[in-house]
Amino acid sequence: MNKNYLEEMVNSGYSPENIDAFHYIALPYLGQRFFSNKNSRILDVGAGSGHCLIPLKKAGWQDLWAIDIDDFNKIYFKKSGINFNKLDVEKEKFPYNHLILLMQYYLFI
Image 1 (cartoon, rainbow, N blue to C red):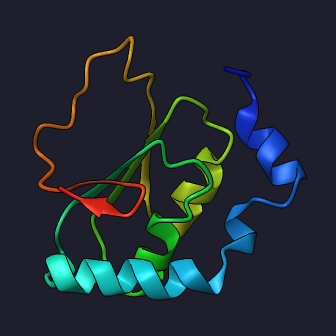
Image 2: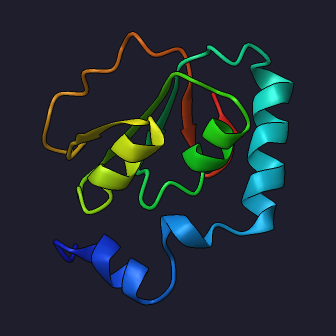
C-alpha cells in the first residue's frame, strides 16, 4: 500500500471537507437505528477521511474513535473531536476491546 494514500485521495477530491449527502443521511440513520444512545462508543477501522465518523459527530454522537494505517487526517480528527490512533491492524495489537461497536463500510456488528 502506498504510504501516503490518504494524501493522494485528498488531492483527488476525497477529503473530510467533501462528504456527500448520502453519508450525512445514511450514517446518522443507521446509528440511530442500531445505537440510539449517542454516548455509544463507535470505532471506525480504516477511517480514512472520516466519511463515516464526521456525519455521526455532526449528528450528536460523542464517543467516536478512528484508526487508520495513515495519519494524514490526524489533525482534522482532533479538531473535530474524534479520537484518532495510527495503527496497522495486520501488524500491531488491536487495543480497542473496550469499544462496543465496530463500524466499517456501513456495517454495524
